[in-house]
Amino acid sequence: MRTHELVLQWIEKQLSDGDLTLGGRLPGERTMAEQLQVSRTSVREAVRILEAMGVVRAGVGSGKDAGTVVIAEPGSALGSTLRLHVATRHLPVADIVETRVLLESWAAERATAGVPALGEAADLLDRMDSEQDIDAFLALDARFHVALAEAAGNAVVSAMMASLRGAIENYAGELTENLPDWSATCVRLRAEHRAILAAVNNNDGGTAAALVAAHIQGFYKEAGVGSNPARD
Amino acid sequence: MRTHELVLQWIEKQLSDGDLTLGGRLPGERTMAEQLQVSRTSVREAVRILEAMGVVRAGVGSGKDAGTVVIAEPGSALGSTLRLHVATRHLPVADIVETRVLLESWAAERATAGVPALGEAADLLDRMDSEQDIDAFLALDARFHVALAEAAGNAVVSAMMASLRGAIENYAGELTENLPDWSATCVRLRAEHRAILAAVNNNDGGTAAALVAAHIQGFYKEAGVGSNPARD
DNA sequence: ATTACAGTGTGGTTAGACCACACCGAATTC
DNA sequence: GAATTCGGTGTGGTCTAACCACACTGTAAT
Image (cartoon, rainbow over all chains, first blue to last red; front, side):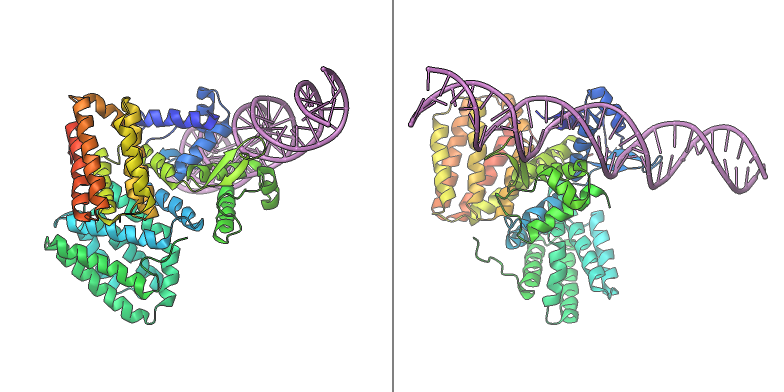
């Protein structure tokens, strides 16, 4: 077993045992190195991996944001991983879109009216109405979809949703350039969002799921991404 | 921007541009360090991250398995990430099980008879019939479920399925100790597997999906995991 | 009371060295 | 001639020892 894996194992145990909790600080790199009788290099490699996994965040200096603290951001971490695999051409974008439809439909069907996330979703829709910049609009759009997923109350589905969106974020930005008429598309997207949210708030899960599926598939189809292109 | 992130960016570009493909070798660490005008340490931190993402595999020595080569194993990488987040208690096991039901039901419904993965699944079932050791049985069980997911032809869903199973692998092993009568459970599981595979091979997606959902939920319920316990 | 500044501890980066490993090839041996 | 032995070479793995930038803290000078 390689040295940095030993460090990883030790930290994972601290987490499992509850000795290290969300918001808590890891010992300094030099301290851990001495305690575990390894070099600081190996400790750093372990911390790098945890950082890539969205389990910790490292900050220099001293005070509030300093040190290596435990966080919980699986979404961005999974997103980076998926993005890299998309780069290797072994995760087709069409499969990502398809999975997104699957997860979001399920979330829309399962979400129940009244949860806080739906309030946030409604707020985001209001802000999208007055947003002119395309990139800013897409950012709000992403947050709306994540909020919708969170309304289902499943942390794993939320994280996966966020990661899927993140993995093809750049891709989505480029797609808007393919659209024949952005302003028309924008109006349509806003209307569809309203309809989806209304269905969820009305506890009409079946309708909400169908609307979400059509919403996502419609966007990518209009932008020129086949729903199921040939695979190699 | 930190130095190792620059290295990551460079490697990701090589992947995106197709200059680095599956099975290809990265330049040696010393070479990359010189080319990018950074220290070998920074290169190594980047490689560590890619390794944790399941994008590369590093091997010492020389020859066939030596050097840092590009691979495509998103499943195990996502699994490790999820496992760590489960350790931080921010991804409830119940949510993972629920997500597994969602993904596997979809895969079972979508799988079409005739694909190679189903042949492998049938072979695995035969081997499970003559397997006495519990751990070995569970390993075959895991492979059966992954094969079933692969039959749907969506690489993202397959990867996520594998990762979910991996994230709670240890957990599943412990659960078998809670079962009142393993041999009885084992017989039941085998029968359910056969029924699921038969439904898929019969292109009866709806039945297959329902059987899969009942199969998974039944196991965890019998082992004492609530389908949706209280969250903190 | 305010300001200026040295002190301290954090992660970030670097250079240089040594190790174990696996192959390759030449020299040696049978 | 074939088999064996043994350096040579290049790979990642590890370690040490420094220095840097940063952000706060406490003290000293104003």
